[in-house]
Image 1 (cartoon, rainbow, N blue to C red):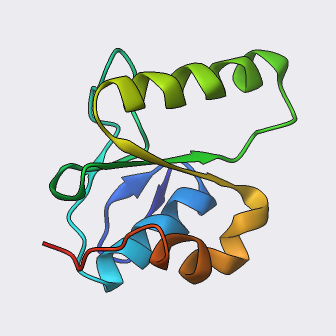
Image 2: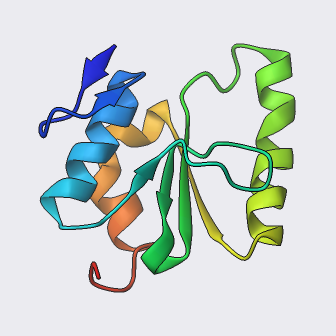
Length: 105
């Protein structure tokens, strides 16, 4: 298990990078909180946003089949969804800053 800069245990390098980005900007997040029968990687309740890191996209058919189901469920629960993949990790600032339009609260 890996840990974020503030010592929070996470499952992947991608999640560590995302957590560190959020923490550095003061966003409050919950990791793998229950929501609509799933556990999103990052739940930003104050912003009404779910961030999912789909780091294995394209490597496993069962995994890929769940992606749209998860995104649809989170939207049904009233959350905006930010879906990130491995190719986004070196552009987190670009991908997250434009989607997280409100300052952290």
